[in-house]
Length: 296
Length: 334
Image (cartoon, rainbow over all chains, first blue to last red; front, side, top):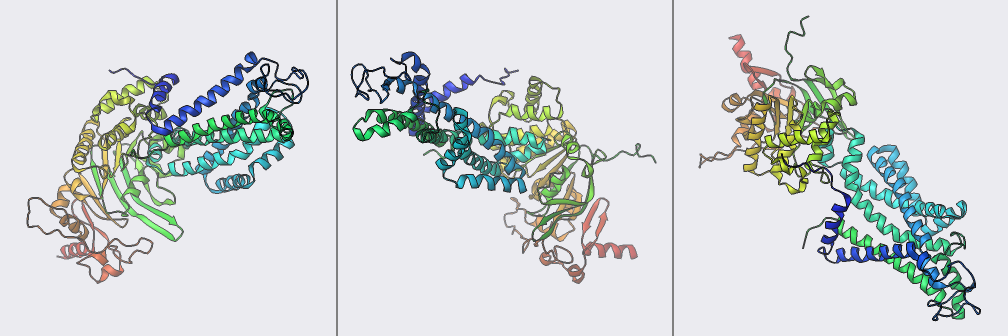
């Protein structure tokens, strides 16, 4: 009897997959570069508190006048409150990354099951949930997020929830359309012919075949969530000023830019841009890799 | 009152009628059809597209696609009338008592699951106490029986060819040793050589596993020599029912005769292939009398207005045709 190989560890699957990415052309490289950017941003934010030269929230660490331009002691300059911009850049991504991760998680938890159920059950359930989701979808995203965040108040979880409400319809629509296709495929009928329950067919035959599409939507949504989170903080609906946050630095920098203090808004802006770019690259790369098509 | 003494057939289909309730009206896909099948027998169900043969196969396991409804009749598997069963009771029968092989092996296996996982799923659905390792061991034994190397259990469906995937589908259908296996056009998507191999495999498995086999196909030539009994269906009706050899040597229904004449024979170089003129009727509005009369070369007057009866022309050979009915009437008078 040959050896029975039922499960391989996650890592064992992941590492050969990573190596093969380099052989998949531009899409593979996009994924690698994107994940590189995202991972180094996350690493920087996690390790930031240990490396930052000053306490990012302490005021007046530099002697007046503030804001002072980049100099030897303060490589990225200081802001109006005399806080060190380099320290704020190193630590300031955590809110944004947490909000993005949580909002994508919320989208998963809400969008995927509702999409699965609606399309599998069909009929009235499907119509009503499609109607609700479409009405969310039709609303301008940032305006909706601002309205909900204003209702729920400050905090990472509340920000994440208000962003999730905006993006749940994308998940729902993707899952629903995929299930509608997959549930007509012969292997789901074959599963039923072997005595599988509806629930089993849905969770073990349909869901695993939808996952690649959900992953693509999720990675593309990360970038949107980052930008929406920045937008929420920019209009003053972020977390308190006692937490370093790039979004809040943007708000401050906007007021200082006319007087020529470009460094207060430029550096956090670049960081947000990079993070969004990283997620976009991963998303676009994965969507190309996971969509089957003929080799040239 | 000696029901337990009389041995029940393994599978009995009794005046089964299936309708599709469409927006435009009811379509009678299977009309008042009956047959019985014993252990070790092979039944061929032959008919062209839309004749109701697949619907009949699916109605045996109660999986007629929406909006199909079984309006009348019974399907008894081991004496149990499955038309009356609840969903849960029916699930216990599918896969366990009746195995099903679908037409297209390329899409009948879940692409994200290894072959072994399909077997684990199937076996543990019906026997929850079996461990994964035991299920895989049984899977390997079954795969070996259908001619797939047991170590390929860790491969994904896309790593197999069409013929091999159909072997895997067959292995899944027989894994729990069901009494009946229904193969719905199992070789339509395969080339001729693989087709012959798959059909021989099914025949050998029927003998070793001692099951009854229903072979649904549109190709009369492949069932003639392999089936004990053959039902020829036309527009939802049974038109002829006989053994394979009888049907081959004495086809009685004009439709069956037409089908037989349209089989090419490589030994007759000068043979002219006959085709049946016309196309099957629209079942939303079927012809009033015999459903075949519009295409029939021997149609008489009553064929247009009355439905022909089923007559037994010789022992075990049934035909739904006025021509034969008149003949047997005359014989009786004489």
